[in-house]
Amino acid sequence: MLIAQISDPHVRADGGGAAGIDGGERLARALARAAARAPRPAAIVLSGDLVERGEHAEYERLAAIVRACPLPIWPMTGNHDDRDAMAAVFPRVARADDGRWRYAVVVGGVRLIVTDSLEPGRASGRLGDAQLGWLDATLASDAGTPAIVFVHHPPPSTGFTHIDRSALVDADALAQVIRRHRCVVRVACGHLHVPLTMNWAGTTLTACPSVAHRFALDLRAGGRIAARSAPGAFQLHRWHDGALHTYTVSLDEEEPT
Image: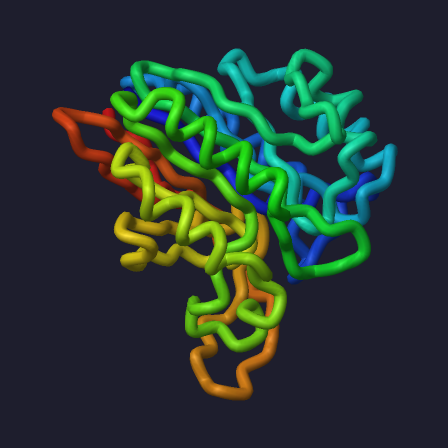
């Protein structure tokens, strides 16, 4: 069973983007590539920063792009998103009573638990006590089913100084929840724009690269954000024989024949 994760397209209405990259065009290509694969993914998770400025015109373009995809799409907020504007693009996804995009679905015997770390007006993220309580209860309600927890913001320990400044503020509290539930086979993030794999909270944490621009791999103590042109990529999570395998697929990579 395959789940595709596509992250940080930063769609703009005018087709522009960092490093001269049109994130909307990249997203359309990634969705088409995922849908055309064999075996085909059972679903796609869009893990945040779906648009650049949170504007309605950007979401209108996003809607036209995702409408062409035949696969089920499960969205998540990032720090560039607007919760209410997203609702017009994904009207069938039920939000929580407080308006957050947090929910859980079962796909191919795996639970996809999507969280909402958006703090409007801030680059950093926060889940908050109420959402952490919901996550704890949701995981406890079905301890026998493997779960992937999606959160846009990674914890502040990625090695990227500039990203760690805008990381998940309550990462320690999230780690406490994750450690209580052995059913969590992965914490899957976005935000970093480059692929990352690390041990965290008793499980494995991965960050999906951006399908649009990437950040320079700057691990210096005083490193800065620098957008770079790159082919763009997404990830495939494969649940097989009790293990979760993750593959990074470059958009310029030829499909097997």
